[in-house]
Length: 292
Image (tube, rainbow, N blue to C red; front, top):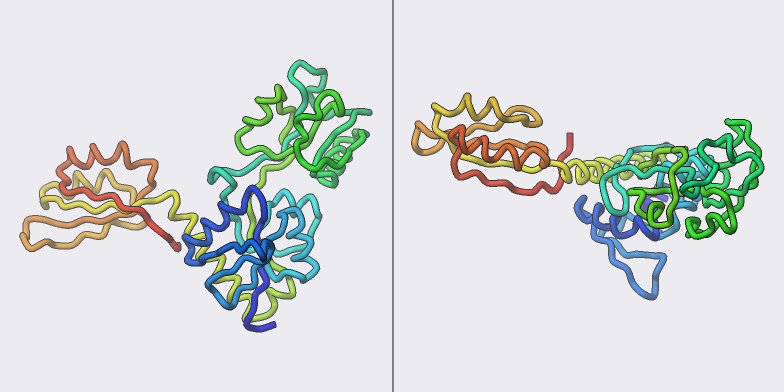
């Protein structure tokens, strides 16, 4: 109904990263021990529900949720017909995508999907794995596993299909990646009927803009500095701003103030170069949101 947007928030490994992203976007979520699936939020127009990300695409498609955050992997595994409003490139530990991979024991005879013929595979991604095998005309026994697939190789199954962000868990269990089935990022998805409602669509678009703005800011910083006019060309030649630097006069007409937004990864190399080019009083500051 108008006035409330039912939104699914991923429970589990993505939960804290999602709450942190929303906080940076301007929304404060709080958990209550008595309402573990119903976090409170400081926006009366939002009705959040905390669910496993595996379930969120299905509930969005059915209209139980108007929108929600879930992985592209779970949208694909469910085969859900949802509208992907925005790609939000964050995961539980980094801003990098995750991979859904086929893995087997180091030293085993499984080196490609063809080697799975007649084998047993454990996974949470049953439908995705079955489609992957069908694409390669391979017949294997796929069984559902409630996580912890790594410990099942090789005693219970010959291979697993799991998601990995860094690969550390696979290495710790002496497993090798045989193939990458899917590269996945978090998606902000919406129910198609909810998208046709003008109020809900505007609310979803506002949330999408603010969440993407918060993510953009993760990779950027602001820089302020003073410089003599004679140094302007040397300094600006070093800069890669989103647009062009903001340049303002100072009380002393021979001096200028300059401000830019630049990639955080550049700063450690850029600051010494700016100093040598004549910049003074250089200040680096974090950004909360950057909306393109």
